[in-house]
Image (cartoon, rainbow, N blue to C red):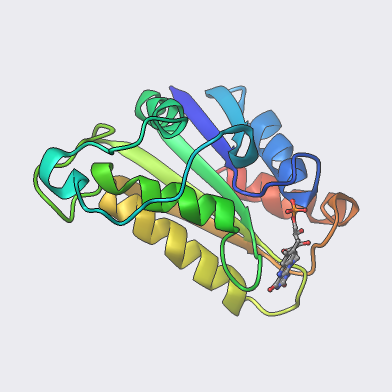
Length: 179
Ligand SMILES: Cc1cc2nc3c(=O)[nH]c(=O)nc-3n(C[C@H](O)[C@H](O)[C@H](O)COP(=O)(O)O)c2cc1C
């Protein structure tokens, strides 16, 4: 079984990347894992033209197809997202917008395949869980429209830098036991 772990932050060496690497280490004994960072890919914003509602294809041709190829290939997807202004980072939101050709709100639509499971980890610097809940809700909404079954989530507060992740390692390891 293949697992795709996505760093939804543009920071490749920060707290989100640290959590991605803990998850990879924990599940790599059970899954063939691949980790990506959203910032490694070059894609444009959705133009909102709705051509894909009729054709199931995007009018643009860029790295979105590479990412969706990896989504298609994976059995499970783990998205790890920090809070940027109380929401998912703009880069990940732009990616989700560009997934509209694969979204089930219109016919025809493309498909990444059925039977996939999706997990979400949200982190933030502030102390309240409400921002983590909002991020989890956005990503699970995205999963739902791609027919990825929402299978677990974890919210982590009071994390700013990668040094803040180590004391939370056990929470992350516990979460991984259910993946
Ligand atoms: C542009 C920006 C906006 C942020 N906005 C929030 C916020 O609204 N609430 C919060 O709790 N933390 C916020 N943070 C803090 C991040 O969620 C936190 O530092 C996280 O660990 C960043 O992970 P990263 O360095 O891997 O991207 C923000 C950080 C950045 C860079």
